[in-house]
Amino acid sequence: MDRENIEEILNKLGTEDVPPEARQIAREMSEDFSKTLKQPKRHIFLEYIMKSKITKLAAAAAIIFAVALSITVVNKLTSEAYAIVQTVEALKDVRFLHLISYDANGQVQDERWIEIGMDGRQIRYRQDTPPDFLVVEDGNSTAAYHKDKHAVVLYDRKYKQYVWVGDLGEFFENLRQKGTIIEQNTNYRGRAAHKILWPMANAEVYVDPVTKLPFAIGNTELSYEQPPPGTFEIIIPEGFAVFDRRPGAEPIEEPDWLKREDSADELFNKARYALAAGNYPEAAALFEYVIDKQPPGRNWAWFWLGSTYYELGEYDLAIDKFSKVIDILSSYGPVPYCLYARGLAYATKGQNSTAEQDLVKVLPWMIQSLRQPTAAAMFNYADDPLYRSLPKDKRPTAKQSLSMMINRLRIITGQNFGYDPYGSAEENEQAIAAWEEWYENSGEIEFTPDAELIPIPKVVEEAGK
Image 1: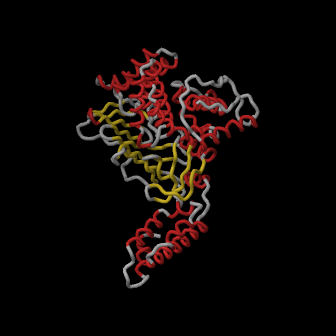
Image 2: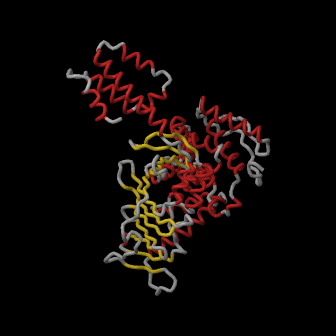
Image 3: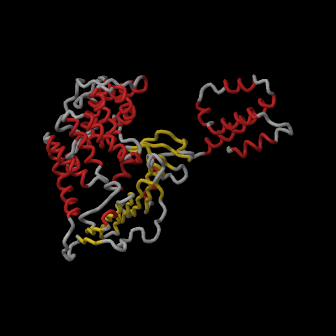
């Protein structure tokens, strides 16, 4: 029911002008009627209308209410019930993915085109991050455009590949198995939508009710049209130098900036191992070098540099680095693992009110992950700089992830509802239910650095075994 419908109904009430209050009430009802239906005391609104001294106002508002009610009820009765499997099935037919991310001012921060094969894997790719970063993969080669250097570096795609997510097929399957519906028939910036939680994306996603396809993740918009001709074509701009690193290419003297970039890649890995080993001064020096030489896209270097400074007791520096990550990834929505880390740094400094602002934002994700352990994957990745090097069978199991998340919750809330990774399913279900009930009824943050923590076993049977 739009404003044109409202005006038409109001104008048909008679030749006498309808009081402006009636038009305002009608508009407000139309724009927010779905919320009105959810209120158990709808009669209060009707009572208010009927007691009005303005007869015309009462008549107008009552008619609008009746029309809006009938339209809403019909829509709810005739709309198809949504299930996440519909989105998974719709994604199987997707061959092109177009992503545009916006910053807080609505400016394009990043644009990507992806061609997807029948097996769910990436075939071709293009990413443009203004002002200086552009990469194009044509299926065989990868071209990294260094606009500030007026140079293009060519790689064999097998050696250097850029991706939005590692395995799109696995990404979609995670939605099928672990995704949950948060709210049906809502809206996103004025567009009808279903809101779902996609654990592997670590984000809330908005789905088009008609196509069943996701169209927004945070401040990133998704569409599925075929890209313009030449999108995945590697073109060398006039005046750009070419450094070809593909097998069989003629050797050429490379500039120092390119050698430093290679050095940064190598040192990034050394820094990860230094952090994991507890050699914090060395890790800090290495990560600082990496972000100095390769600032764009190195969000994990910024994050683990923050973690390093946290371990060194340099909390202001840690907060600064965590804030940088949140800024880099702002177009993708909240960054739960980073909000948690920054919240801890604030709390450790004694800035509890500031810490609470971060931690209350991440608390819903943490509670959700008690039912969906895959939602904790990014927390685990953030906690372990060597996680990316681990084979899948060496990564935390569902019960280990659950135990670690409960420890995080105990630290920021001071609550302890019991949980034993070796305990019975019934006892642990009670513990999870207690956390959920506490969150619904209280959910207060209370930083408790000396909270009793669960020992994380080295080997734990998977849930359900």
